[in-house]
Amino acid sequence: MKILVVGAGATGGYFGARLTQAGHEVTFLVRKGRAQQLADEGLVIKGYQEIFSIRPSILTAEELTDDAWQLIILAVKHPHLAQVIEQIRPAVGDNTFILPLLNGMGHIATLQRHYGDRVLGGLCQIYATLNSKNEIEQLTPLHRISFGALASVQQKDVALLADQLAGVTFTLDASEDITSEMWEKYLFLSTLGAVTCLAQADTQRILSKEGGAHYIEALYNEVLSVITASGYQPRSKVVEQLLKTLLNNETPLVSSLYRDVMAGNLSESRAIIGALVKLAETTQQVIPVLRACWVQLQLVGEEGKRTEP
Image (tube, rainbow, N blue to C red; front, side, top):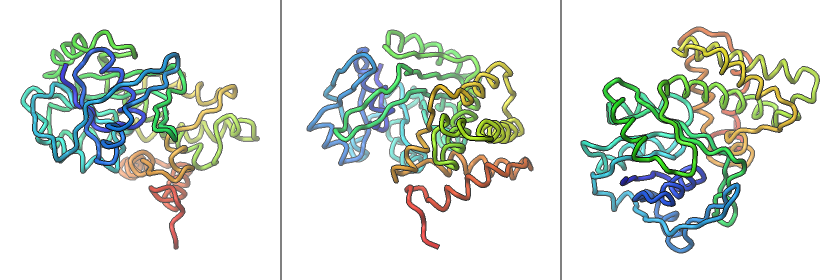
């Protein structure tokens, strides 16, 4: 399959390399600096159980003219989405599907306004990072992509894509209810991001303190109330399991949002936490703890540095 992966950071680089490893014709769309780096050094994956490298095919936005891509995977952060929407326009043909792996939910409507039924629902689950040597390190065995139809007209194409992608070495699921899965990932990651950013600690440390479990559960319930009022239909077993995972005091959990904020990197705070606060205003949900987190994140700023008064 001919695949364009937009972004070659920890997420795009990892899954793009795995797709290349499985024999697909993968090209990475990256900025000029990253393009030169990849050309010089290749792409090294330090997987949980293996290390491998590839010499990736690379394009920059100025070089993108071919519209024969079967699949475009978007693996960028929210602050770059508007730019990427325009950059990929020459690559979207009549037989192209767009699979966004961004966090949250708001990007779907944004993409659909530009590309309609070309846009699939999707999410990924992986704990990976780009280290100081520009190697992608997979930190746990989890590596999964789930995708599915957002409209009935897409169902046959989703099944065909799943068949064509069979044989990859990560978990690949063609979901029958991708919208619920996306809401549930949003529930988990936004709660985890909010609790860790507000407390400036991992979940294990939070749970070791008096009231820590109540704090996590209160924030979880606030987020759940917002997304339920916004269209999510709770699946009780999934909702219970997600909360159980957050309250497990044997595993110190942090979110990518927390890591970005603490490191001073560009974060998705507005698209994840800010978007929830806006949804709560629309649906008139009471969310005092989530609002406190959003105030703090605005003071820090999307670049992870405290803004001046």
